[in-house]
Image 1 (cartoon, rainbow, N blue to C red):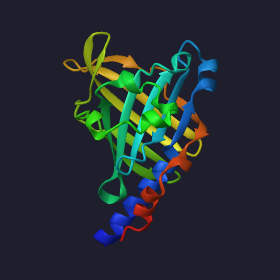
Image 2 (image 1 turned 135 degrees about the vertical axis):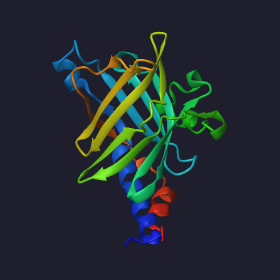
Image 3 (image 1 turned 45 degrees about the vertical axis):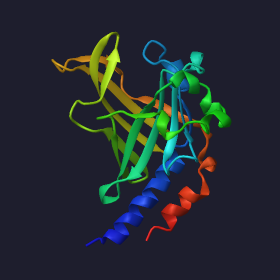
Length: 213
């Protein structure tokens, strides 16, 4: 039987492994060039926010042709969860336009404070290690609401993260009829990590995991 002591250490080590693998800039350029009618060229970036609590990252998601105007800007906080797994909590920013260029501006990133964050209820992911990768899925219950083309929908989302990159599937459904309304129809978006920002993880985050006992 695994003790609480060893479970906490396992979860902390899993967190560090996940953060090292996740931090970086991702592109699906190859996929978009091969299938332009089906896949837009998208860039996703995860960068540490060392001044906030352990596991806090800035998420910047944008079309390649409009990188300075992200359509999704979030602060995610990744924490150990039960049985060696992780939870990824998502927050929107009160004034997102203020931080549109923060992903490439360290001074601006340092200005993001806990008071800027608004928790997105029902929109957290559960993540578990799977062999040499991590798999995550949005919590069940149809509670992560997204406005799309003036209509309220709920999000169903999954991802796989490995040393090869990241695959994601996001789909939206009508909150009343559960009818599919938007999202990938041709399969997962396939992203390759083009920039590695894991070296920006602060030492105290890494020490917290290795010193868990």
